Length: 130
Image (tube, rainbow, N blue to C red; front, top):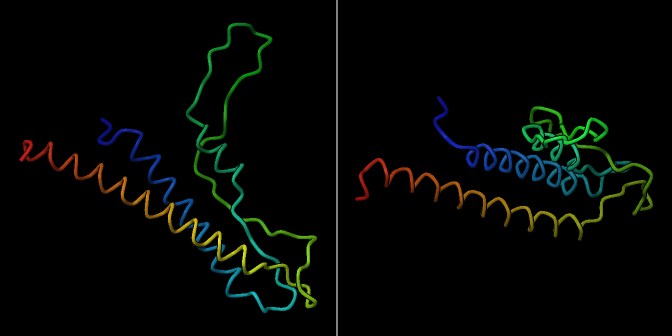
């Protein structure tokens, strides 16, 4: 028996993604002056494929390509190689990182608020609407 619906799973995966993004951005900001440091970012394609793992499309013809994704939540970070913004070989753009951090914090807070609302709804149902 499934206790929670897929909304909780999606919110949990989204919070995990936001946490991983925050970690990568924090690493980038803390190494802004480190010679040779290459910035990191979360690989969104892997996250998207993980979320699409449960989706299945009906094939009306055997020549149609199957629509399947990979199972699991495989969030990973990748290094952005091949660019240099500073004379010391570092490629961290502090303005971009600060902007990404602010956006990520707003998204994280919105997800937490939504999760809290879901739990408050469950609490209200359990208490009989009181």
